[in-house]
Length: 368
Image 1 (tube, one colour):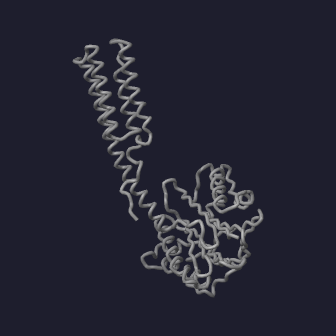
Image 2: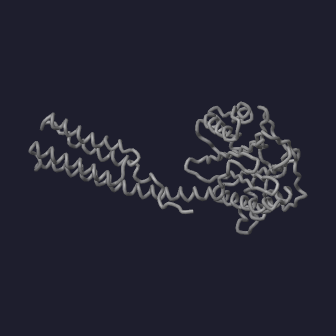
Image 3: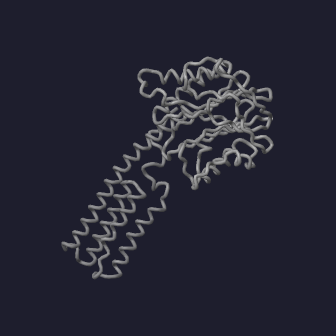
């Protein structure tokens, strides 16, 4: 995959808003015309400095320099017309406009270099997110899938939530999780768990053996001597599902994660396991005997929603949690993407557009 050195549309925003250049140019014309009309007794020339100042906010250094030169030229022209070009006061005004324009050009150069650095950082973060959270196809075997991921931080691309889908021989295996750590350590744990799941799930081990492998991967990674000071500070809640291509059941192992929700005929049912397991990484080394799969009915047309707790813990202005099951029952969409779109808009409306935690939603529907 080839990566652009510079994302399009950055550094020269005026290219996408060419009409805005008319504002500083119009100010130069207007100020010059008014100054000519009012005569030599009223000096409006110093106001010309507003033009390059506005240009610095909407354009690059070259455009700022061009408008600054026009402003200086207009002031020189006005001084010549009124016969005061050689006066000390008028020369001071000319040099002042020139100095301010030069400062604004330097400011734009520094600002653009800073923007290029941020753009490159965003690009790397975007690539890293796509490596960790690979885009999912809309159809996998007999399943239709839609995904929503929102990082709590406005500029963030990678958070602590994770999901993955792997095709096995006779079905599809799905994992959703939430790393309970912070910063780069949480990203590293997410990458480790996703890699372990993708490497093992397609080999079709029994689901308890797969989850035991995931747990031991996280547990032994946190037990490394180099990370001894962080041992026990990070774990992963996760739900691991297996949906056979044929049949009317799915298998679920829940490791301390919010229960998936099943939508059938407008009714929402939580898939609550009888014996939830500890989050991945907590406790000690385990075997497949420590896990038990629980079956749940999953028929053609049923819609399954798995999610992270950033959804149900999202609060409105009065501190009320987001009522996911209630809003899910009220959704009139017939497919996974319609459901995700509805919940996305509704969640942002509930929180006023801001989130305190990362959010991941995966909607899965078995095609008839």
